[in-house]
Image 1 (cartoon, one colour):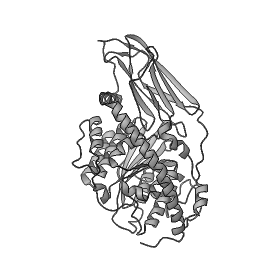
Image 2: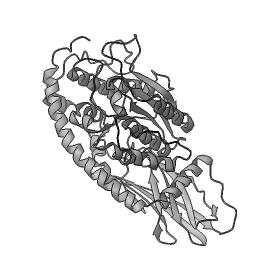
Image 3: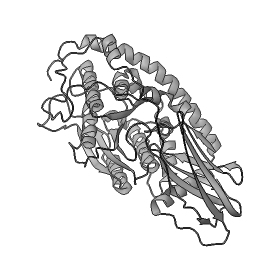
Length: 451
């Protein structure tokens, strides 16, 4: 079996770029970032586009392909298949570790019905014991997608945090705080703690307005050590941002709120944080400039999801690192893996057919012009003792087997249609956001009005 990610993620390579360092928040410690001066005015649209144009990094010189399981000589005893697990280290930038913050919009509008029951059912099949929320709301779709991210990363290399945001009204909050955003759980590798935080959000429900800038700032604070998390200076820093609307806070004017989000994105870019933004539902797609710009200015990816029920498929396509191709085969049999799963952090696992006796399994990863290869020699002996699989990998192996039992051909065909529609929407909405950005640059040339 071959996993090719480039067709779905062509936009990602074009967006991998550094951005000019903007000014930090007033009163905040700028850290190592040089303060270029105040940002009370926006540059003309053409100049802003030129200054922030993507700069492609050079091709990677090496790709680190690390296998976690099996070891050479492992004996498999059931199912005539081998479980293979490993990880591709980030080819662009920092290898080895990822810190990611999931940001959940809990504003009042997320209580609307979403048709997301199918997404919740899909996750409940993968996450055993998880109770389905009583209603299918946009918030429920966000939480189902966040749970999928928990299942798709390797906690040995990746830490996650959960931040929620809404808002009680325009105006500044207590000094030094973002009252409209909160850290539900700081960066951790504990999947149980993360799942518990999502359960608390489900019980708390929706309410308030939409302070996107506060949510993004709080997420960045967790990544850089200004929040409740212990920072990892060497980790790749990522924000996965869900919202179903346009920003309505912290100011009264839409344009001022959008500029607040853009400035928050520039602060994120200054700290090398990449934002993967998801605009969910018709309201978020009507005026997408905030969600488009937070991704574009940080070298992330903007994903429009017209139907909230499609959010799960959209999230499954997310990759924090870039991989063109992953091929896992039984070279002895001359057949590919029955199932390969590639997580957003570069972790992967697969089920590979075996024949009795000795088998040679090969793994080949391609990133640009760079190829990384590995192999393992394993044995299949029906009736022998089952090999020990570490608990975290056993969970992933069980998930693969469940997925294989589902009607995956139909599922993958449906997901492909969803992703094709998302790609069309992405191009259209990025053009719309560019027009809105031009209007915004002119409209907010003067300082925004007070609260």
